[in-house]
Image (cartoon, rainbow, N blue to C red; front, side, top):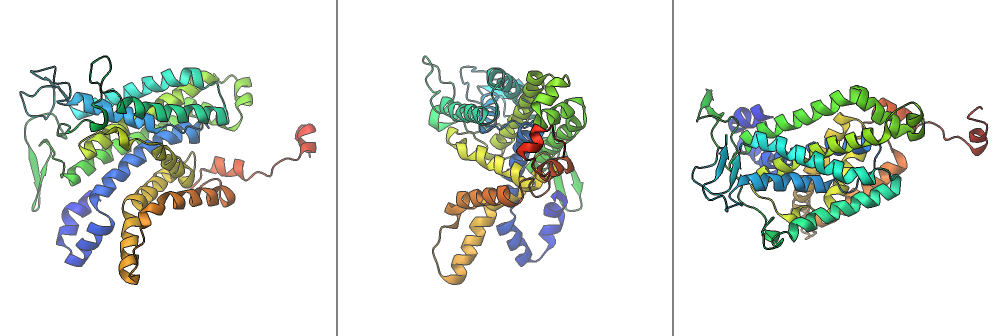
Length: 381
């Protein structure tokens, strides 16, 4: 896609360029990658371990604010500035750390938050766990919203948020670029807010890392423990699977992905504001996991890309085309949650395993339910 937008699209006709500019702008693709990273993280918690989490947006927010704290001039009490491999201009106050390191720091902070929150709550099950995580997801954004005066210390800047963030650079050394054909590609130049093509490459690398980690863990011992807990917690416990340790690991790894997504989102918008992290984000992420197929990383990726594009570009563009064609004035984007809710209901009724389920999940969900007599007989027919 990067090759297409960099080399092929500029050489196409004006009509083709207009179509892609309206229906598939690279800015929307970059935002969709943020959703993919977070959906892959939620899939570890919900799809692998079977833990219903309705507050995943909290990790997204923590990751975003971590980027805001250590990639900007926000902490201006440090008058001479603290720099570490940063592409920020010199002699600025605040903390300025290279964004690759910020990704690791934010992921670790979120993983620690996941362990702290998960330790007392993961003993709960099903609906009770969902309610607790929902509360966590509501509390964290409120903390950021009201954190501008904590005993006189401005911790989050309240509703004003943190902006702008430092420009990111692909590599932490002096200016350098490579030339391919007529295109000059900066490989270490600080990227501005409108360098969407170069940011697409960076965001794709982070997305590929999240997918790789998810797939590798899924095939390992820890991944098999998560699947055992998801399918029958009691049987997994009897087989020696450490329930709490495995659940905490799922929560921590999922939170780490949420932290990565938060940093990418903050860099994408060049800012972080508390009102961006509302409850609806958790529901949309859950819809992406359910629609794509719980447990299947590739299915979740497709579900996230489809819903993210539909929400940000597809539905508004369809509405504009419809209104222009029929002379109406319908606000189609306002119906997005109605459409998402309807999709979830239909999926639960007719295809619970999602569009692209993993084989194991499909077999479990398509098993005929046992009658009461069969259960009393120990499952013998």
